[in-house]
Length: 481
Picture 1 (cartoon, rainbow, N blue to C red):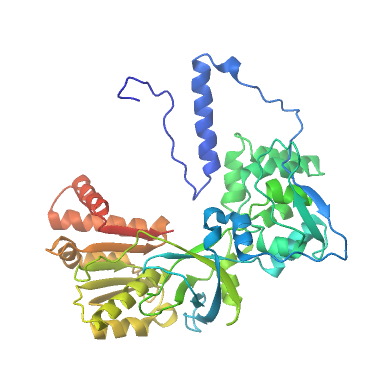
Picture 2: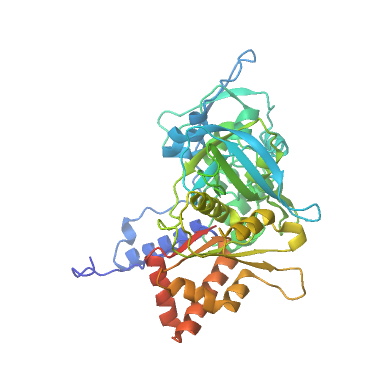
C-alpha cells in the first residue's frame, strides 16, 4: 500500500507476550484513536460512560439434582474445551511408564525424566509433546473456597440466549466442581486484564472494586505491572488480595478464569532408538515469587507426582528443529540444563544411524548446569556417546563449582576457531540452541556474533548479517522458551 502512495498514520506495534501484551495493544489503540481524532473522526467514536454498569460475561448455571452423577469426559472433549482447538482430534492417552529424578540428592532443585508409552504416535527428533495437566488438590480446594461451593456439587453450564459476549463453548456437563476446577481452570497463571472488570463487579467492598478497575485502566498499567506481573500474581493470589470478590460459577468460567492449557516439552528421545515411547526431560518449577509466596508449576509437579501405570493426555507438535538430512553434516548443540532434551534425541538418532553403518559428521555439545555433582543430567549417556564416536566433543560449564560464574557462552568463545571452522567448512555445519530465551539464548547469540566478528575480522553489523544468513539458511536453529 505504501508503494501505491498510501500514507501510514499509525506505526505498527509488536506485542511482547512474555510481559503484558494487553498493555502493548492498549498503547497502540491509544495512538490509533489519537490519530483518528486528528483527522476529524473524534465525533464518530462512542464515548464510554464511567457510570455505566459493567457487563459481565457469564454462562447460565444449572445445579443438577444431588442424585445425578457427573458425565465422564472423553479425551478429545477435554482437549477441545481446554484450549486444544484443532489438535483435539490428535489427543491421545499415553501410559506413564517411568518418572525418575535426574538430579542428585544434593541438589536443591529437581529435574525429571518421564517415559510415556505411546501407540500410534509418530514424531521426529526435535518435535514437541504437549501434556495436558491437572491442578493440585490444594489449588482446587482454594478455588472452591473462593466460590463458596462444595467440590461435590454437580452442575451444567449453558450459553445464554442473546448474550452479547462471544463465549467459547462451555465444557460438557453434568460435571462436578472438583472435576471442573481440576481439569479446566487455569488457577495459577497471572489474571488477564480483561477479567478485572468482572472481578470488580463481584467485589462487595467498594475500595477493592475501585482498585481492580484502576488496575485494568490505561492509567493503572504501571500499578498492574508492579502488583500483578512483577509479583507473578496468580488468579488465586488475586482472590486473596481482594477477599470481597465472590463471583458466580457461570461468570467464573465464562470471563474470569481462563482454560487450563497444554504444556509443551521438547521430546528427549528418538523414535528409532525407542519405538512407541516418548521421553520428556523437564525442570520442575518450584520457586518463591517476589511476593514471598510459593509457585509450583502445574504440569511439571503433576508429572512428578504420577506413578507408573497412570495415564497422561498428550499430542505431538511438529517442530522446525531438525537434524540435517545428511548425517555427515557437522552440528553444534548448545543446551544447558533441560535444554539438553532435544539433543538427547539427536544423539540417540545418530547412534542408531551409526549402527546402520552410516558415517557421521562431527557433533559438538556445549552443556551447562550449576554443579557437576548435583545436576549434570544424563552424564553417563553423554560419556558413552563420546566413547562410541556419536558425540565428537563435549564442553561442560558448571556455573557454581567455582567462584567465577562459568556459562556455555564462555566455552563457545574460548573455542571460537573450532566453532567457526565447523560452521564455515566445506560441509557447512548447523548451530542449534535450546533453553531459556531471556538470558541464555540472548547471551549465546551475542557470543556467536562475537565469534563471527573475530574469526572473520569484520564489523559488528556485518557479523550480525552473517549470523542472520545462517538463520535464513536453516543453519542456526532455536528451540527456546
